[in-house]
Each structure stands twice: as C-alpha cells, then as structure tokens.
Length: 113
Length: 115
Image (cartoon, rainbow over all chains, first blue to last red; front, side, top):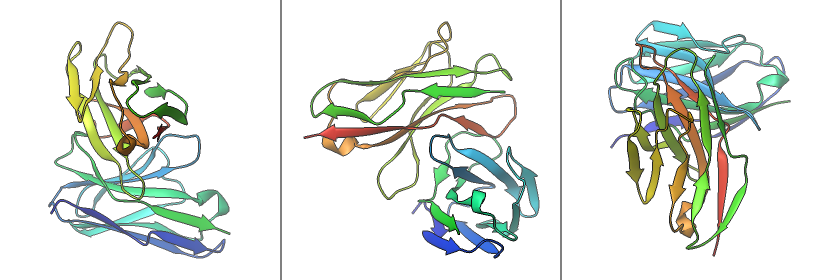
C-alpha cells in the first residue's frame, strides 16, 4: 500500500514550546519533503531530504530543523514555536531526486497560541 | 523565481456543467518546465491528477484534461461535465527539469459542486 502517514493530524501548542511533526512512508522513496500552507498562499517548501542524514533547506527553512535517521521516516522540529508558525504542514515523498510524482500525507494542522 | 497563478476560489459549479480552472506560470529557471495538476479531497493529502512534461501535449485523467501551452504559458484544467465527487481543492504546479527537485505550487482553487 503506497502511503504517506503524518502524525498528529491536529496539534495545539503554546508559544515557546517545542514541536515534533512526524512523517512516514512505506514506498522506500529516497526523497522526502516538508511543506507548509497558509491561507491564500501556495505550498511553501521548508526542507528536502535526499536520503538518511542528507537534508537541504527549502525556501523557508528559518525556525525549522529536520531529522531523517531512517529512509522511511522524516521529522520536522520546531524549537520554541512561534505564533507565525501556525499553519498546515504537509509531508511528501518521491522517487529519486527529481520532482515527478509526489505522494502527500494528509497534513498536520498546527496551532501555536 | 518561478511562480504559478491560478483561478481564485471558491469556484461553484452545478453538477453536469463544464469547468475550467485557469493556470498560468512563469518559469525563470527553465524554458519548458514540467507541469502538474494535484488535487486534495477533503481529509486527504494532495494526489497527482495529471502531468505533462512536453510543451504542446495534453494530459488527461478522471475526465479532466489540461494542455501545455508554451506560447501563453498556461495549463488550464478543464472538464466537460463535473460530478459532486469532484469537489476538492485543485493545485497547479511546475517542476524544474534541470536536475532540481522541487515543485512550485499555486495557491489552490477550491471547487464546490452543487447537486
């Protein structure tokens, strides 16, 4: 079954707290992504991971870091969350490094109070 | 940088009527990018609807079609007769073929089908 799973689906945190968003895929895809989407904006790329411990900044990496210790898992970490990080976060994966078909998770709606 | 502009939603269409969602792009990093339409159904992640990687070609899937027009830098999504199950958010996107590995997405267009 080709699936990207994100946990949790909804999360409420207070400003200054640490946040961990988790993503898993069962397709052995090398490349994984974290995007965020805010109202009125397109999906914005936060980070790309090309494989275990091979990560690259996207367009809006500030305030985020990532971890990929296993090919099937990719985590997004917010150290000391800010209210402007309230957003919907999407994880995705794809074959190789070329952005062909991306497979997305259902998203995590994060609210930072 | 690259950018994608699409019809602002929500777009409301009656069942069995025709649909067009406009998409135009600006690709500064490459002349002929790959073009995609993704769809997000309620409660689900985005999924690929169709893609076209050659200018002048048409892609189709699930009754939807889109033609890659390099003259007008457009990739409009059309369907002749929509169904209630087509209610979703549709995203136009472009991809850089020169070894880059990221897509540039439009804002998404929410489509509401009235029964």
